[in-house]
Amino acid sequence: MSTIQLSTLINAPIAKVFDLNRNIGIHLLSTNQSKEKAIAGRTSGLIEKGETVTWKGRHFGLYLTHKSYIPEMVIPFHFVDEMTEGRFKSFRHTHQFVEQNGSTLMSDTIEYETPFWWFGKLFDTLILKRYLTDFIQKRNQVIKQLAEKPL
Image 1 (tube, one colour):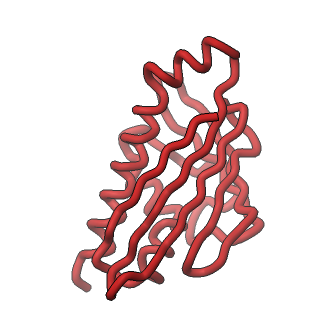
Image 2 (cartoon, rainbow, N blue to C red; image 1 turned 60 degrees about the vertical axis):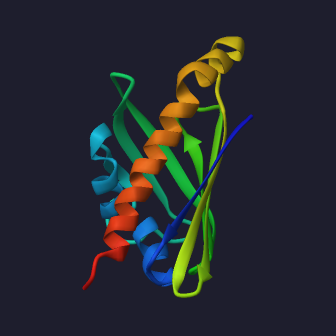
């Protein structure tokens, strides 16, 4: 199993940062490099506990789908999305939010397993882990910019 951990300090209230993270439209905006679309389940607005969303996007030259389920959510402190259908053997993304002196520390922990035995592990080591890290960092920068933007 591979793990990616990222933290982003955002000068904005925790509730605002939390809602930007679970907003389907913001996800689409922040992942435009892969032409992401929400094609089933919750396709707009704020995703809630117990809901699913199916994403379709272009990664590595292929259009891939990834269905996520939200099994845990404690507003505005954390939520989890888990892959129920997709290319990974397993995929779990934990989003955590901690208020710090009027700012919010946003943390992402992504745990995943690749299929295809040694080939999957090699692909992860050489390409996938860096790709996913960059993908989430770009997404987090868009969220940071939107959250810190004055009203």
